[in-house]
Image (tube, rainbow, N blue to C red; front, side, top):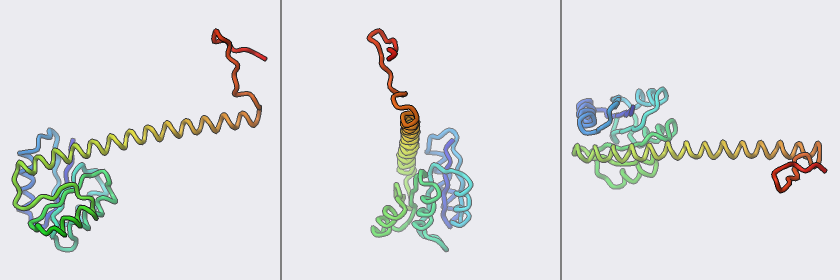
Amino acid sequence: MRRFLIVDDELPVLHALQRTLRQHVPEKDLQVEIFTEADQAMVRCAEVDFDLVISDYRMPGMNGIDFLRMVKGIQPDAVRMMLSASSEFETIVHAVNEAEVFRYLAKPWQPEDVAECIRLAMVRRDKLLEDRRLADTVRSQTDKARAEELERKRLEELEPGITKVNWGPDGSVKLD
């Protein structure tokens, strides 16, 4: 199941984007949560993991960059996107640099553009999670190898030569 969170202070925009996602995003089990207030959305981010978080840029109380930066701190693997009617280059650059925004969606949006951005965002999300899983596996194997090496050294200190085995050509153990 994919879980998306959308924040915009305009309820009609939220409903329109929610409809666009449901009509044009081919996810079978798609759950979309919408919020008109960034503070409430932030509380929800602390409770549930989201695959994708979309935030409007201009909102009362907290702008979208600040909101997405906070989401990054809580859920670093959630893909973050900015939604805005503003096409100011500085705003876009700031969003990308500060909150590591994956894509910038302009209002009004084209449904096909949104669908393609979501598809790319989910590819990125899946890659992030797979990279994390592989890193955890390598880290676990490395930790296990270190533990075995530490035990080998401890045994050698107690009984020098205990970890050395003299093998015969037929695979047998030669005793000294």
